[in-house]
Image (cartoon, rainbow over all chains, first blue to last red):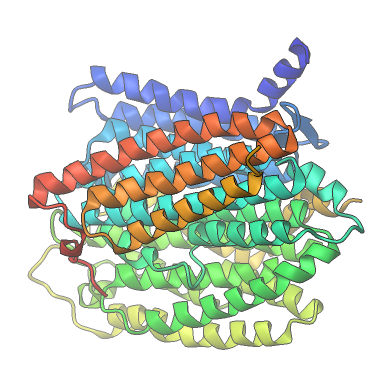
Length: 486
Length: 100
């Protein structure tokens, strides 16, 4: 291995390095800022992320393996990098006024968001289980701290503790799975795994390892029965971080699933072992996520259970193991990230300093206090429920068509029925906003410029993706070409 | 020579003991210790497989895994300390603000 290999590898990882460097710069810069110039953290963060976005798009091209086949740079990675950087940019926009209001320390917050984003990006570039594990740990540890950064709130510390314990538990299980796969195969490379498993019969150890990896990654995605941490953690964490967690780590975990199961364990002999498991997991997740969300009194917890349900919908596409399935997962992740960030963005504006304001009643009469905000919230609720012409409808349409195309009729039926059930709790919010009298004693929600930009971008994205889904879907199909080329 | 399967069995037993500790113990520090036990059980398993397969990859991965476990322990202790400052207890049963 000579210098050119290292140079080529580093050149391809420039987007990741940009994000990490921006995070480090913010950490150091924060030492020199006063409370009046605290906004510089945000500005530096945004500049770094926009630069990383441009650099990530520049990586598009033929797939190439880097760093002795430990990392890969291909169009799938580019798609995910663009998505992760977009999620980070939107989170930064949402956080600007939120953390000032809630008295959260700015420097570490932004640095951790950026480090978590770099973790996401490394997950998407992983060609080896070792890289995957380190990347998942990077993003997990950053998110454990972020969940607990709301120092005035005891719920936040409790959420951080629960997230840490269950997250570390699942990481240990994932690691054990990787160890078992290593013992069965003699290497941890996903690329070599794909090549070697042609016709030979499968060692039992490999199946055991695969099962443990499903459990470990299942925790991160929050499919049932590994979803127990989601309601408490999403409820206790600062709202901007809940938004980040619902979009980022989830997308990263799906990227991990795509890399490991669509690229690594993709041979038909192995697939007939894990596809039935995925079918059961997807069905349970959709059913439980939607049914329990109906019972929730707090809108934040309701959105947490709805996020479990949406992970279930996206999981349906993973049982298909074909191009439409993978492309529809990518499309759904983009659509869900926009909808979720928008909905949580509205939550940050309605809640006030120190007061929780997360019950449904706090949204009563929002249409008369702030009609634009109510309209945006209604858009996000309908998008999450899957009404046309929003991106939520297009995403579910593609996923269920992919499932039906492969013969999983029951799964598609469960998906459609649970989507109908979900309208019950999403429409509750809309009903509160438009058909109740507002509480005129408290002042209306205050929407800052940055939050307004966030809401505008996510709403526009939701509508655009819903009315013109083809552009992103074609992009997604082009990105997953690698997985099914040969 | 000791058969490699003995090492793998010890690793599995340690992993299970650690998992039981995480699920059943009430003191947050003991839970953290059990978590570390789980991670180290997997490290033992990696070294055993690396010896069995005569491959250096397993040994190197153990280094990375130990580093990650150390970072995780630091974060876990910081979180427990924050909770202790607020509530004067580290009994996990008392973390029940969010129940259902």
